[in-house]
Amino acid sequence: MADPRSDQELMAAHVAGEERAFDELVRRHSERLWAFAIRTLGDSHEASDALQEAFLSAFRAADRWRGEASVSTWLHRIVYHACLDRVRRRRTHPADPLDEGTDVPLPRDPMADRMTVLAVDEALDRLPVAQRAAVVLVDMEGLSIAEAAQVLGVREGTVKSRAARGRYRLAVLLGHLRPGAGNDDAVPDVEALGGGLSSPAGGER
Image 1 (cartoon, rainbow, N blue to C red):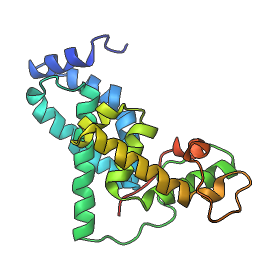
Image 2 (image 1 turned 180 degrees about the vertical axis):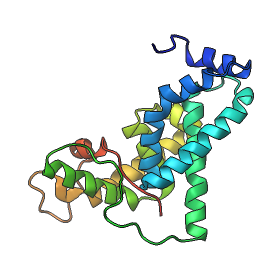
Image 3 (image 1 turned 90 degrees about the horizontal axis):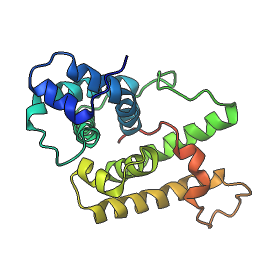
């Protein structure tokens, strides 16, 4: 049976020394945080390592959580920084390109939908990390602008600006997915591509 206590109560119990309290937080949030990590990094192995590092950091730093943000937002922020660390390492020590057979999870959709997801993956991969993170948090994870600002450590207006620029660039890159698209000069509406944007996607460069 799932623990009925709130995230805040579990955090307090963990800090007080209860052994299983943090395990429940991991169980409760790991799926969503995994999706966030893999959308940010685009590599399941890197995302797994980043998530493990983030949970270890959160485990050790729990006594410094003061409740200014929700536990979920706090965990997202730690995962985001773990992903950024891996992005920086990747830039310093470039790895060999992944095979196309890498085990990044794909949704069990018809082939046409899978091709759309792959196109969105590739488009997200071309966004700067700041824009991608804003789009992922707000449009995919469903965080509010205020929550995303807390995760990214920036002002709300910065999140709005980054998300707007990211959506515009995605609209341009994914214009061919719009029904009846054929005018290369037309800027497509990102909202029309919402089905693709709801799927796991995107690695950093």
